[in-house]
Length: 267
Image (cartoon, rainbow, N blue to C red; front, side, top):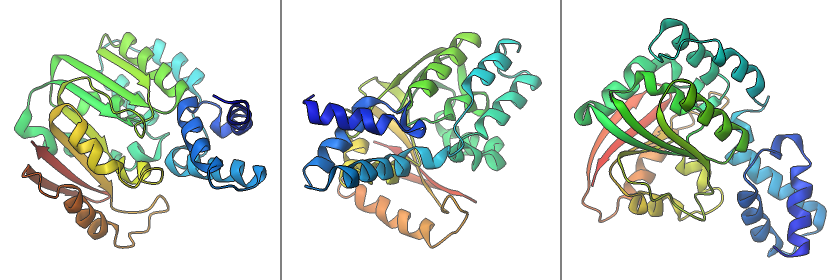
């Protein structure tokens, strides 16, 4: 990393909302912005705006992982325990993407994944706090779970979650616009991810669907904005999804939920 780029990344990270974001992603966006020839101040602002769109907008208040660690350590190690499930629901409420799914959590994964049940391995990209929904998924007791996201503190929390509940899981940081995970799994989860990534790379959607090494993919798109407005998003993203599938010949099943449109791809 050259000196100018390194200085830019560090200045972006000075903002509390961006401190825990994977440095590789910040560097990638900074490289793009530097090529535009803007002033230093405008470049920093543009980078932070982009990071807000792809990440911090979904957790504007931040997440107190220290408190969550403390609460989790006192819980039984069975994720199906009622006390544990209450903790998982409350924790998922800290992130907009999983919070929007809570009202249909009992149905979402059972309906979308029933044809593949029981599932023995999952690759969840740009996962957010979705791995905490494992207790609501039709999986085997020995489920293998690989997940990645852009937040360092979130990844550390998820690895602690796997350890505490004796889950065969691994979480790590990733910038999907630069490198697509290659861990094979029975199913890949790409939940409300593509619109965020397309803020950085407009061609990334089709690439992710093609390059993820999973024969089955559960892909979803938001049916409303973060502020709750519908704005024709279900129709827009359904049409956009069809363009991403162009000439693939894949088998696709469609599922509609109040806040989300989901598609199960079988390659």
